[in-house]
Image 1 (cartoon, rainbow, N blue to C red):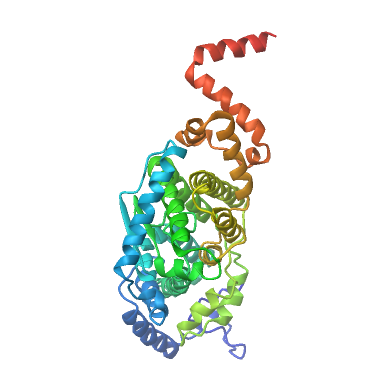
Image 2: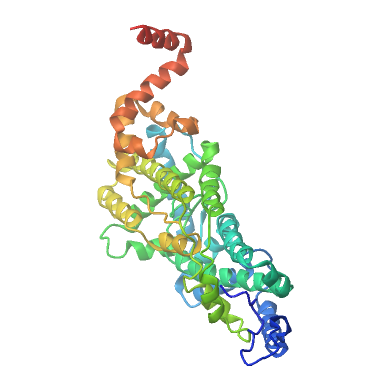
Length: 425
């Protein structure tokens, strides 16, 4: 790898002095870069940190400004969302022991969705962006770091703008397609807020050959079920976000790509840093620790989606004639990978596709059939009881083990005596 830092000229082969340290610094290039950087920063807001969220929102809103999803909607649509969630909550009450988790019901535009979910996106994206931007600086030789000096902090700002630009484009795409606040499987919105996006739901309904009101209630039931889970399982929200952070901590950048990256950067054109970062050269290498974190995240997402799938089906199957078709449509939409997966693959390096959704649904259905609704929902009481990826392969064994575990919790002395008798036998 070349030891020549970004912004410096390489040693002239015709220079007979033999003193690499005498290479002149290209002040004209630095001046051009700083002037353009200043212009970019002045138009990108005052956001600090590894991702420029002011720029992200600015880009997202600009992209949405020419679409119908950014406009408001009639009052009757807002009331339709409220009525749908209220009806869904009544239908959910008999099929789950988790009480309603919705404190507020709202109808969002795509712009609302971006505004309300940015705080959670910050938690998800900051660790990855921080690790990515810091990894290549850590890989630089000590002499290069010292020579680059203040340029490193400026490059950090430019990196934040590059990530912000990527995030803005992704949020615009997601905002125009998501149906509810929990549509990507994560609790992105404010806690206790059930939100549906009527304009996006209207587009989604086209071609389904089902009444719009039926689709609205079905989606409201899914949103309300998610809210019950995220509100009354205290560890779940934190565990999902922590797993993404665990993944970020393991990011390692191929330092051999830095030399090639440097060749793509034009110091007089700050936009070239964004193009270089998007070229794939700095894509992280997947480590064993990251694979383990990814497996945990995929399993947990599948369990969340599987539980919601089973509970909503029990609530609406006999009430909505098209529920089976809608259930299958959403299963395929989630399992085949949509805008959410593309966004995370680009920004976080994670795929949010719950590959084991059907297996998770089958497991929750089995537990409910064998042990009842209360036992099924009590599995969420302790993170240690949650099924693993291996349990999804053998749901019968998990259901049997769950019964033994509950006996031990209810009467630990009797369970200890039983274990001692088995050991003696």
